[in-house]
Each structure stands twice: as C-alpha cells, then as structure tokens.
Image 1 (cartoon, helix red, strand yellow):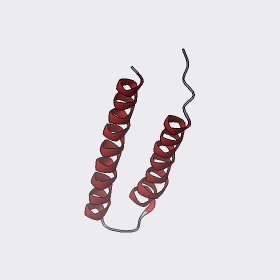
Image 2: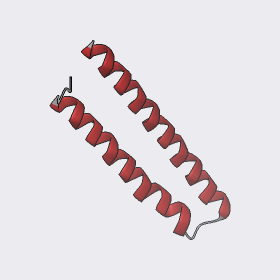
Image 3: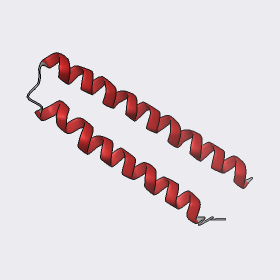
Length: 70
C-alpha cells in the first residue's frame, strides 16, 4: 500500500534541496575558485564531508520512517 504522507514528502524535498545547494555552492568554488590548490582541496574535503553527513541523514531518515510505518 502506498503511503503519501506529506511529512515524508517534505523531508525528502528538503534533502534534495540541501544536496542541490551543496552542489551549487560547494562544487563551484572548488572548480572555479582563484585560490591556491591547497585551498581548493580543503574546500573539496569540507564539501565531501557535508555530502557524507547528508547521505547518512537521508538513510537514517528513511530507516526511521519505515520503522514508524510498520
């Protein structure tokens, strides 16, 4: 049975928006910044850490929601 709960939908949209913002505002400075190579790599490592946190948060949210539905 398909569950169209607005809370789950809203949270998933917020995660998609967060991924979009991190991609736009995080990868852009890594690719086109005029800083040193070391500064770009530091920015890249921070962006990768933010992606990891977002992915773990999304996985946790989906597992939590499935448990709540059962």
